[in-house]
Image 1 (cartoon, one colour):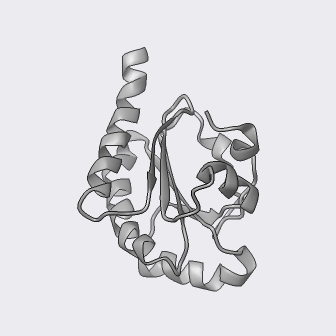
Image 2 (spheres, rainbow, N blue to C red):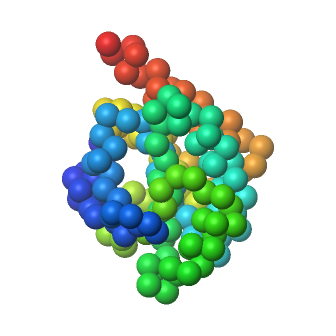
Image 3 (cartoon, one colour):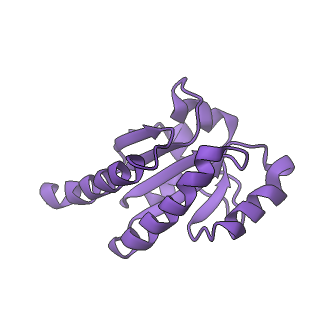
Length: 151
């Protein structure tokens, strides 16, 4: 389970109200930590956009959180969202939340598939174009199936 220091943190969003992970309780959620300067993140983002299109009708939510300074990167993050046609919520992770999520592994991108019960089903560090999208899809499917099995 994610600690409340992570789920209750108010994270600055590119648009609209701050992002709070606790607002997504009861949903399957993919959280992606990334940065505009990160090449693997640039490869991964179009894949995440595709996965979001595929799974959002099943209630899967996605959030992209830049690890950059929100003030210094505001313009570059907005451009990134526009250039990659990102259709899920994007904001910035605080250093405290990033440290907790990354558990000492500060490589990005990192993605976390979180089940409806708030359990981290799977964590991905880095991006491999041949493997990561397939594995993320499997983890999302596993998270979607989890509640069905518990009903």
